[in-house]
Image 1 (cartoon, helix red, strand yellow):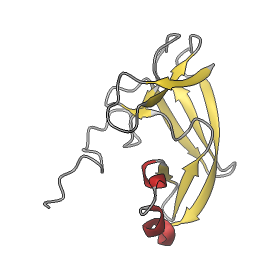
Image 2 (image 1 turned 90 degrees about the horizontal axis):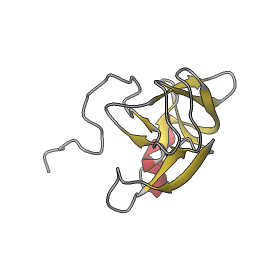
Image 3 (image 1 turned 180 degrees about the vertical axis):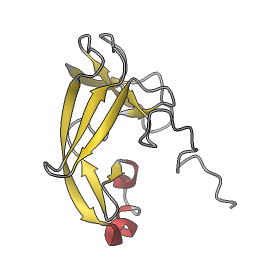
Image 4 (image 1 turned 45 degrees about the vertical axis):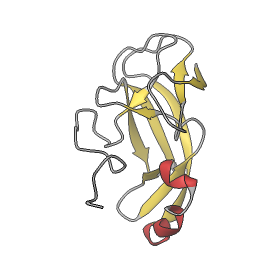
Length: 128
């Protein structure tokens, strides 16, 4: 149902994306990614590694490395997928926000909510 390949929607050193290999209907749970959680106090250590670009907030007190395809979905302000944190199962569940066609790249809004247009942390000007 999913495959990783070069994305036309990315530039620089991160050029992979996740694509649908078949049509996925709106509302379908298409990927359930297990997570490895860590307390927020350890995030400063994560920020010193390449993993900083792949972790999610996982509730108020934890971050999470999302396994499977979970950390490879690219960002869009017009996503075709959404995700939900499942604290009981320690997973992130990915659902089709609209119908997704075969060979279409699957995109999520990194801000969490599909209609949130806040600037992303890695695009904000920190004044330096």
